[in-house]
Length: 317
Image (cartoon, rainbow, N blue to C red; front, side, top):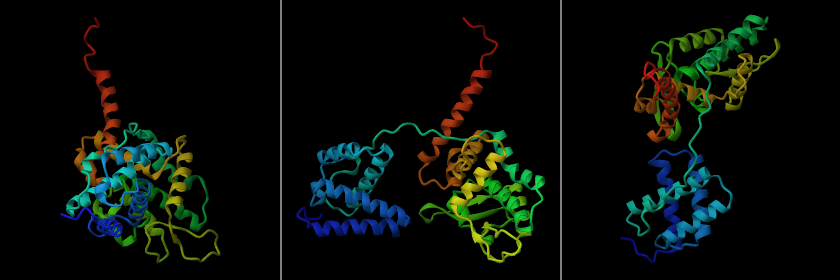
């Protein structure tokens, strides 16, 4: 058991040790670690606690009030509390005397509302790049853009990839023959994703027209006949712009994002009978609770089915 008279410097060293533990043992991203560092520093600054033993339920209660009065969103308040709770769990494992992590309760948040598009909209979106190429006489470089856009849309819908994961893909990563490949997601966790026949076909047509040697799977093509610059890897912002342009071509009024296609991927699986643990693995969610937000959408669909077809022959009393 650690001495309760631990110095402030030793306590600060514990925080550094915890952040290194997150990086090395838990594989957390640098962005996450920086956020945790900021959240914990904010707690220390507010509480004035010199030792872990000084963290009491009253200190935490007042800290939660302070966070709320700083007009932070409930979700942001919870990020602060999750960081603190994780740190306390680490202290307990190190046999440092402090309050039990379970004493920290998260703020209640409103139910997460998913914004998705229906099946007809998805089909129109996936075919929007093809309609563009058929209506326009395109220069050589511009011929590639509709093929690339179709491949992007099909791959997002087929795999549920995060936009950062999509942008990081190299040609060598994607095995069209096997129809599956490994992707490194959040926290450097690796998972396998599967590529549909439509996506494989779209990617194949796109790559056949590529004449460059860039390793990136999806690239921006130089415009103009005299521009011989090497293509550059697409950024998340560019992917977002591509999706929105094609959504407008498809006549979709909603703002369509890469993450929306991830939502569509998940709800499509659940609606067709996939179990939630499998969907969790395909999405790369660390916690099944994150995946369960999609069940609210499918529950709504099931309710509509129930209302439409259950007991229709019974007389109303």
